Amino acid sequence: MEPSSSSSSLPYKQPGSKLLPLIQIPSCPPNTRVRFLGCIASYDITTAQLGLSHPPSSILIKTDVSLLTNSFSMGDLRDGEWVNVIGDTQEREEGEEALVRAITLWSAGGINLGKYEKGVKGRMEADALS
Image (tube, rainbow, N blue to C red; front, side, top):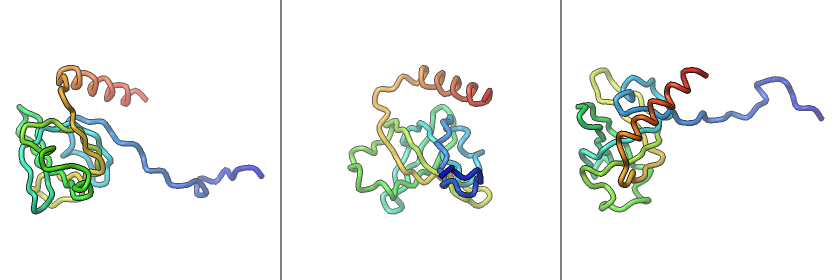
């Protein structure tokens, strides 16, 4: 039996995440899967929200980690710790900070920020060409 040429018979596939600098997250429309690096500025245990920044920028991305609270300990969420996040941007009211619902979060360890930022820029330039 030959596969159907109709696109409606193809299974739905969630697109991969877009690797972006943190400062571009607020400009993403809702339901965009993003990947970014952020520095923990705060953690609210009652709402399971991290405040992530990328100094020297003053932009703060609220990151809902409620789906992940069983996968890390409180010691993993220290102020000043750099983390990688993959998640989906959420709907927000005008004037509210950007909100991302994290589906994966892991430590960036001893990351070289200069090399990381150069790599992100290169990836964005390559994506723009394709």
